[in-house]
Image (cartoon, rainbow, N blue to C red; front, side, top):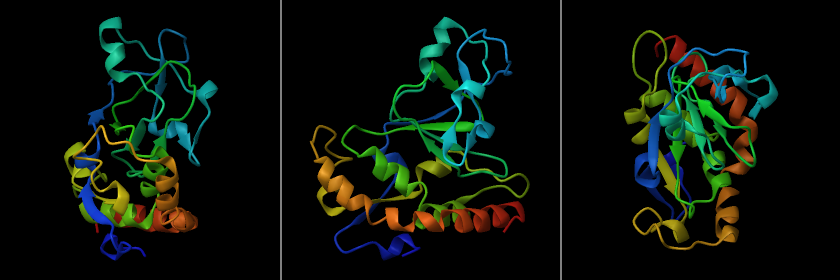
Length: 204
């Protein structure tokens, strides 16, 4: 099941923008090893789906702006340009005070959408095939916020009303069951991502 058209019976196709609360570009500033502000998460700090926060540099930002860019539990950051375009990372648990850099996009989703399902989707063949089709530009690979927003997003049967009914409470058990549709295919991530990146870099 590598195409989103091959979703299980009863699932529906929506878009990332229709299920997300916001899609936001990161902050533009130079990084420094000096502790002059919050941690400054960059694309290069995300390796093998992990972030070593102690090695993440800092940046300067005003108190008036910092709240807009602060990272929180459940945020998903997305590499929008470069050789690793499409790479994503789900912020989980307690992290240092941190903001995200301009080559990243930050997505936020309603609490009703199980965050592990989101994470699995953004590492699935569904997603990488969409990225390959939707990338723009003939030079450096790029997927901007608009393009990311129109990517197809699969919703399991019991969650089809989530986007239109934000207050609806959906059980974690249902989401965990739905996540299994995507999770077994995570072992395919590296070759798929590599193939997509190669295609993007070749301008295909």
